[in-house]
Amino acid sequence: MDTHISVLTTLYTAHRHELLAYLTTLLRNQDDAEDICHEAFLKAIRHGTPRNALTNPLAWLYQIARNTALDELRRRRRVYIDQLPDADLLVDQSTNVDMRLSTRDQVRKALAGVPSLYREALLLYVWYGYNVKDIAALCGCSTTAVKARLFRARAYFRTAYDAEMC
Image (cartoon, rainbow, N blue to C red; front, side, top):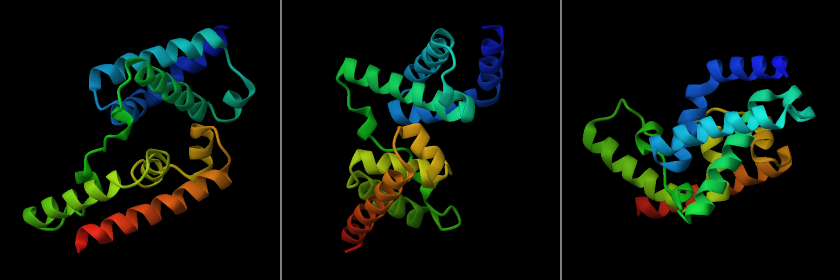
């Protein structure tokens, strides 16, 4: 048990801010994200370390946090998961301000046209920089499913973005 807590303490210290940023994007509320982050670590301590946690402890922790956040959203009957991250991060910062604002709005609207299941995979891949294997572990699905989600997300995004450009 002490080894388990030691591992979680190390994970907490190393990845707390990254996990908190992910939860803030998911919940769109910093206070809620902090609560869920702490709750996820408490759940991890209470439940011990399953086999999949030994191979990829960070993905295991993200999965606990994601499931805890989704449970909270269901409990509150909120739909924050469908809201978008700040599109400024997805827009080229070298262009002028008017062009960035226009592009940001187009990106935001195009992302809104992507169903949440696919948008989550797309954002984890593009914005957070996770690889397909890590996204699969985080979402609790196969790498093939993640590749399919990314393919569909890109198609939805492309269609919505092209419609915005017209």
